[in-house]
Image (cartoon, rainbow, N blue to C red; front, side):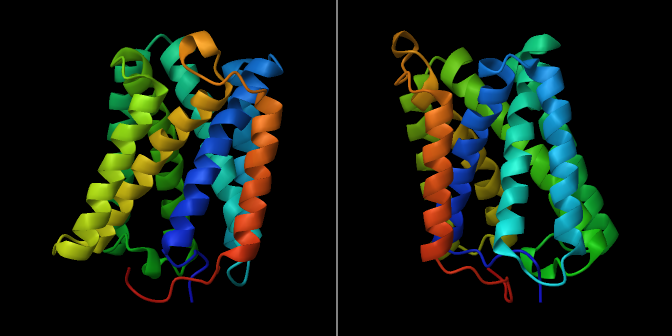
Length: 244
């Protein structure tokens, strides 16, 4: 039995909510609390390390621990991407390029070491470590992609949300109507839910003049956390036991 959830529609709903929360939560600490991208990243990395340790140490699937770890990856992904893009001056394209290489390297090393990157195969500490490192890179990459699409490409937050929603729709169609590897489609979808969450989060808290709703980052994060809690109560949470 794995300690990661079965991939269902409920999984994707919670994942998108978590990635949106990661954007508003990361911005709350780095911007609203004026901690800056570097110190915020260090704080969230410590939190991430703590939750990953708890997740790997758990004897069975614990939904709250799993999703808390996901939130930790997406908040640290937000601040790390912003640190690379803005503080280090790499820009959105440069940051996305570097993170794409890191993500690809993580996936290839995982596959070469264990022979599979399928979710249902995550049944050992080694596979869990690869899983969470890969997720961390994917969440960070997703932040850079979301910012690049909304800002550099000039599509805005609504345009970015539409693009990533359409791409996810195509992946869903391929899942049901094609012979493409379900594992490959899962990881593409997993990566793309992060930029979708990034542009949705920015849409909620950015100024009206920038195309956002100008909501408080504190209130937006609180509401998203409440939505996640309701989803965890109402949507089935069971460990992955078969190929998705």
